[in-house]
Image (cartoon, rainbow, N blue to C red; front, side):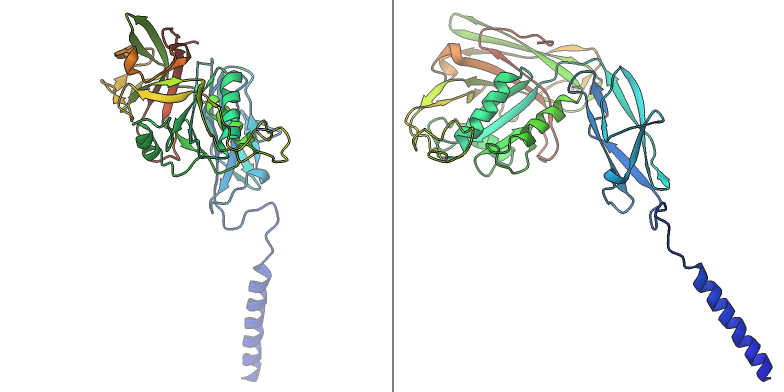
Length: 364
């Protein structure tokens, strides 16, 4: 009996030992507790130009960012980085491998570039001390790149207009300075000191192929401004779209602009030698009047065919009703957009700008 018990105990020990031996350390090339990974691209449709760049990322089943540990492949060829920059038009299949797991493929489409403009809306006030330098940075981007359209919306000073507060509310603006790019919330940063995030955001939106383009024809007859806005649709669209048309004015001079940079020791700041406040301050591209509803006039119909060109809006407005002081400094901005209350999602399809009395085509 004791012999049987001894053998039984030995068997239990062997079973226990065998089980223990099966608990092994997982090698580094395997992925414990993960069955799949996915990859994403910052842009799935790219223009073949200097802006046509897509940044790749990878996420594990657990939601962890594993981009730095993932090897990406384009059409089966190993990539040397996480940035995809095409060299020719066509369709590209992108995949990623993380240890022993391979992601499903995603497709990137590269096409001839179309005229995409990026819209910067800058919310400001004369009582905002950080605004002068940030405003100068935004102006420089507008002037140095014809694909950037920028204008400013004032409140609590003499340049506030009736539309100002509705735009503040619509775009969830609670302070100044605030910047929206294609009506997307920009992360908080000191734009005057760290302008690169704004430049990166502009380049990102320029890397996306537009769904539609805009043209503006305008003329002045007998002190009446005539505006005709057309849209050209590059893809079939079946959704609610809106058009906002506004008048802005450049080079408006106001007094006593607060200047927080006066006397500061900051390299490259153009306002360190200016007083606080600045007695005569030049404001650039300031909103003077919205000629449509502030949140846009809804377009009818809501379905547009690829290749379709459509007359979107005709407006006639007496010059003396435009709320401008100098006609030579006045511009028309047209924005084609969706209405989205969530400011984390881009809603602008495209925008266009032209001097009052002049015209601009889809390609310009």
